Length: 54
Image 1 (tube, rainbow, N blue to C red):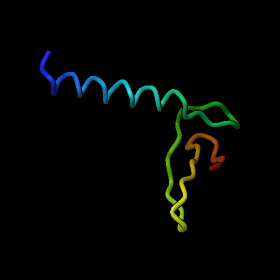
Image 2 (cartoon, rainbow, N blue to C red):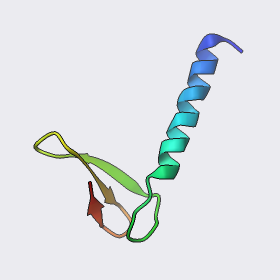
Image 3 (cartoon, rainbow, N blue to C red):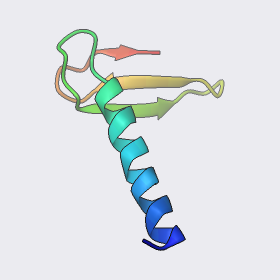
């Protein structure tokens, strides 16, 4: 496997790991959007139930 292919695989695994961790604490859905706030903070919004948290 080439170096670029290995890096691509690592990036996909990392994305899958992060996606598995981002679940709505209200409904448990994995349909979560990351939102940047005015003060530079990061918040999350569940696109299933509308719950937001940071």
